[in-house]
Every structure is written in structure tokens, then in C-alpha cells.
Length: 442
Image (cartoon, rainbow, N blue to C red; front, top):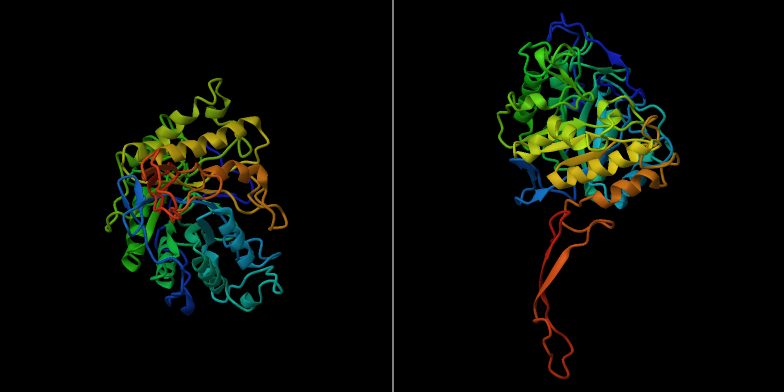
């Protein structure tokens, strides 16, 4: 049985009889339609080749980051800036070695005049009086200046609840797509934003993969949305999550195989997502520990933890191992209170490293009820319980080595081993080659 964490997320079952384009549509306000290009320390965009993500120089990179949530809630801003400044939080992210932040949002932030709720104005004077979208501009602007990348994530249609489908009775498919196009136009030319995760955690019994029903087939909807976004900003990566169950009709019926919400990409083998712009597709899966739901069969099996790798291989790992497409583990996390989770988490991180998958940990925030986070409640202090587990697996995008990673292997090519230097030599040129299992060495 597939489950999701209880914290913050409630299921809204959309009526399958909804006309996709007939729902009420929110018209983006004028300031959502204007490109916002700000100076940034980053200038290169990313593309894909087989199962790899490449930078503009053609070097293989991996995203290793975290989720910073809040824009999808009724605060309409990232959490934590009710206590500290957004710049101090981003500086902390940078110092922790996190290279990418996944930014969940809801379509509510496009409501004209929408402003943040709970902002600490003394800590964030430059955000006072801004709309939620303008706050997003500021945060993305500073992230770019310090070299932290942003992945946008359409997490919910509204701030109240999660939806199994990409549309609801109040937020149509047209609104969903138009708002993402508005974001693509807003950040067009700003390489800080690497792309967009089209919809968070499509799941059964509504969402299917490859069933052919236009009202339910998430794979087809992702194609429509992804191509629309790329028509505005062809440099973005399009991140497509899986569903929860895959089988006859993609539901929980006979023959369906179920995983976490958004975590099942088994259907992508026979029915891959097709985008009009080549080399921009990244698949995404979610994976959680016992603290979120303790009855998943791969945890309760007497063969645990030997059940983990076959489970990951089947649901999404095959895409990377068979060089089909890159995979981002967009969410994974745990309180680590259950002993099994202390086995699961490092094994998942090692698996991702071994096959070359990217990831964004859930979450940076300390206020995720069933996973906790990488920071403590003061939003300043690192929570070492979880951070110390992920730290050795962090990989820089620049090619330098993050503290805690596997050291590079250095081979000195000259002078030769055992060479004798002339008397009086005060300096010598040393030539060497270096390689590193965690990433490119520059």
C-alpha cells in the first residue's frame, strides 16, 4: 500500500469528470509576466545525456541539495524567514555544501496582491511590502549571487492540500500550465533556476501512467506541460515525478504495484515522457523511511535491508543503470528514530552515489513533523543527527571538494618518484593528475 507522510499533506480526490480546461482560471498578475533577470555567480544551464546531467561544458554533474518549503503553505513564503533573514539562511545552505534547493510552491502565490504572512520585517527589511512572487525574486537573486541553484516545484494547486491529479475543481490544467509558463518567462535568462518539477506526487487511485485517459494519465499531462514550459524557456530541465501505483489502468486494482506517492516510475520504460526539446528530461522519485509510514513491505520483510536495492531498481533505479534518463530523488527523509531508518538512509545515499542519481533531501526546514530537518528550530544551528549522515555524500557542482567527501586520488607524474634534486634547489614544479569518485576535480 502506498502512503505519504501525514504532516501538512491531505489528500484531495479530484472528480474524474472534471473538464480539464473548464475550471476557474486564475489570471497571472502583470508582474508575473515580466522577465526578472538578476546578476548571478552562475551562468551555465544544464542538459542531459543518457542517464547523466551535464553542465554547459559537457561535464557530468549531480545535484545534492535539500527542500526549503513554505511557498506552498498559507505563509506564501519560505518558512524560517519569520525568524531569520533569507540571506543568512542561504548563506547557511551554502556553507553546508548544499548545491540545489527545491522550492515547493502552490498556485495561490499567483493570486493578485498575494503577500507573505508572518515575515520577520526587522530581519528582512528588503522584503517588506513585496508580493510573494517578488519575495521569490529576491531569494532567487541572492541564491544566484552565492552560487546556490533553485529547482521550482509546483507542489500543490492551493495552500490547503495536496492533490492526486495536476488539476482540481478550482485550479484547471490551463491555470497550472499558464502559471508555470509565467515562471519560465519570469526567470528566463537566469541560470540560477535550473528547471521545474511539474507536479508533486501524482498518486492513485486517480493518477495513472500510460493508461491513455487524458483526465488521469500523468505521463501525457507531463508532456503537455513540459512542452509548454520549454516553449518559453528551452534551457530549463523538466522534472517529472512518477505515480504511486503502476499496473492495469495505473490504479490499486489487481496487478498494480505500489510505491510512495510520486515514487513509481515503472511505466516509464514502455511509456516514456516525450518532450519536443531534446536532452531536458529528468525523472524524479520520492522515498521515505519508517518515520513516515512503517508498513511498507520492503521495510517489514524479514529480508530487510536486502529488499531495498531491488525495490529501488524496479521503481526508478533502472532508468539510471540502463542509461535511459537521469533521476532526481526529489524527496527523502526521516526522523531517524527507528533503527531501520538508520540503515535505510545511508544505503539510499550510497545507492544514489553508486548509480549517479541526484537528490534533494526533505527537508532543510526543522518543522517537517515526521522527518524533521537539517536545521534546528532556531533556523541557524545544523541538526547533526541528519546532516552528519548526508554530509559525506554532498557533491559540489563546481568540481571542488566539499568537506566530508571522499578525498581525491592524486598521482604525481613528475618529478619521478625517488628523484634527487640538485643542491641549492629552492623550488620545483610538480605535475600531477587527480581523480575523485564524488565528482569532477578541477
